[in-house]
Length: 510
Image 1 (tube, rainbow, N blue to C red):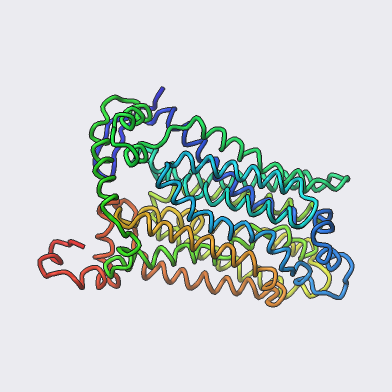
Image 2: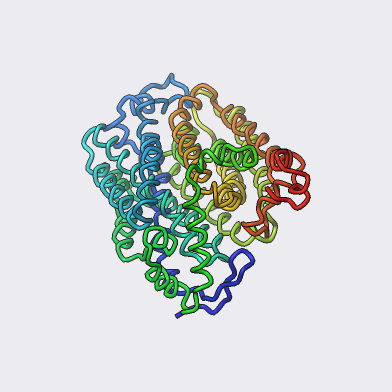
């Protein structure tokens, strides 16, 4: 059964329909986002549970419960505790380079399966951990799983989806991230009240459920036509898969374009060297700046450590986890809203709207905490509720802007000849910054106290200025015409056209 809609590919119309087969395949693959979101949600939750802290981080637990003289902002300052969270991301960074080789040489499907199995093993080890070593090794295995799935799943979705709806299919990954985060906060809220004290084990082990769905579901997934063409001289198998996912026998036009794109891609022997050319300077800058800014908004502070932040402000375990559930639901709602608005309002307006929300809310949060939360004691319920509301405003701004758009923009601005290299830089910068922020945040909270929100607010100002002056609007621009936006930009055009002849400049050849 298929939904009868015409499909266009960057201005060229292909025959086909959105079939249930491609929808189901992409739903299974997109579940890789659930395991990523689940980990982000579960990490902050279990690190706020007393039984978990007392077993693995007794020093932190003692400071939190017994040392009345220690500052509210320093109760959780432990490099071992932050290593529990951040070890996953450095492992994911390393694994992503191996995943790139597996994906390129053996296909997208094997990489997805490896990622799901590694994540299952990490979840099992974490849930069964009896010492800190088992816990950290489990986190490393989870990182391997995320490194493989985050590298292969978005690629799988892009190559399976009809070109006209590629953005919507890719947003499905971000939606699954939100589903995973909300599921983790909900499970944490339920397990924290288990009196026997093993609730954290359930929270950590439950990560294996979506990983199992991904790993075993991927066994039945077809390989993408792009990958089949890349690895096999006989294109008949790719044609049959294309016919099945498009719901029509007439796919020769799309198949020819895929073969041509594959040949062009194989002709590029050194994509990283190409990326360093002057004419690709705008893309190189964006491949570093956009993921850098996405992480320095402070979102990981909220995502990883929302329960700890609320404990810092004097909330109980249940209240802190409930607050994390509320903020997660708000973020999911506004991510869905972005799907509707991004192709209507454009990328730049959403960046600016979200940036203003994040800036104002962070300044107000920092001001309230500076005025009302000292080194000892807690906040009154009224002020705690006000901060929760402001955090929701902040997360809604992120959900409208840097959350989804950080991936949308980087997926559409790179030309084919440098796309793989540039996208690998995006992933690497994202994971490196995630690791660094996860590792240093609790120490920053201890030293900067409420000033940490002013720190991230200053970055929001800088990144908003960056977008205003240096990021052109990409709404409605076909991918193969995307180089024109750089050639017409007041700043970037000097890099695009400096090395061209007058005749080339006239016709806009980059």
